[in-house]
Length: 92
Image (cartoon, rainbow, N blue to C red; front, side):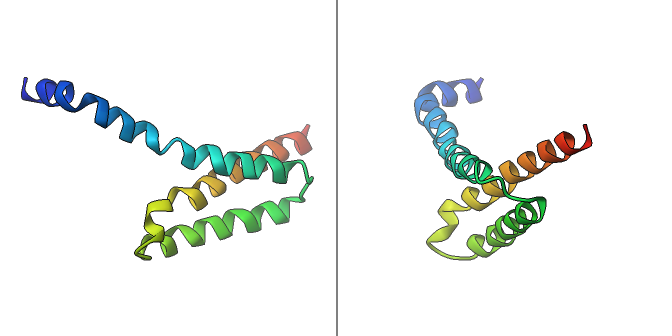
């Protein structure tokens, strides 16, 4: 019951915080979509994913950049999805 009261009292703030990180997937998604039109080979996509995965923990320990930690991990995620789609396309 107490949890319901807290959610009702702070529901608007909690919802804004939950939706506030949506840009962290949309922005890398747009960047990767633009890169997809460049018709990069699979090795280049692997490099993009590795750079994104290496930047994520590096940004975690930086005082100012830790607020943007979802950007490189979002690039790695969307790049991995693109790479998986390219692999399926090549197999067919």
